[in-house]
Image 1 (cartoon, helix red, strand yellow):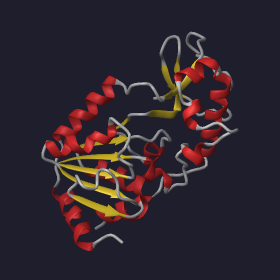
Image 2 (spheres, helix red, strand yellow):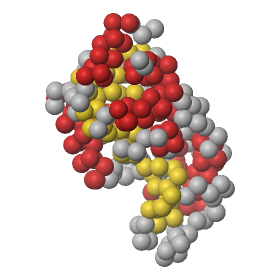
Image 3 (cartoon, one colour):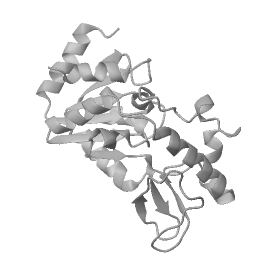
Length: 243
């Protein structure tokens, strides 16, 4: 149950904010039925996500990795944005200074209408050439295995930040700048354990922003933020921007 006083406080902060940053994680997409693809959710042909989402796995067996990603793409394609995705897109329309940082790769924020965003872990509907590094959108289902670059005929890989890889410097700079200039930061459906995103709340707080967390469970962020609202993203987030 979300305490009414805390809900009202966050609504007030949203109404008076000038510069808003939203950080989202797996919890917002879980409300659309998207699995986390880790733990039991990620088990596929007796492989765990951690066994397949690595550069070494792709180097050893790119066909196996692409078969797994094709399975993921076909599953995600059956899902739609929920009310929380739509509420975040509405916030973007309300504020000229707004930035969305998402750890999700499913593309549901874009489908919901979000445009000002950093997909810091990549996007499953984009592919990157291992030769010329060109990044393009690809919604083929099933995707050709093995897919090749139309430009140079190099092998394509998912445009995803894999375990053992670093986030793009450009994304980190964009996120850091947004967090240091915002006066309101909403953290929605993220566990607060995956770095560098786990440190984003601290950056916003240190810069003087009001930080609110929306999550089904207590997280490492809970003791740091100004307000923690417990509940499902699809239920709580729309209440924050409703009239």
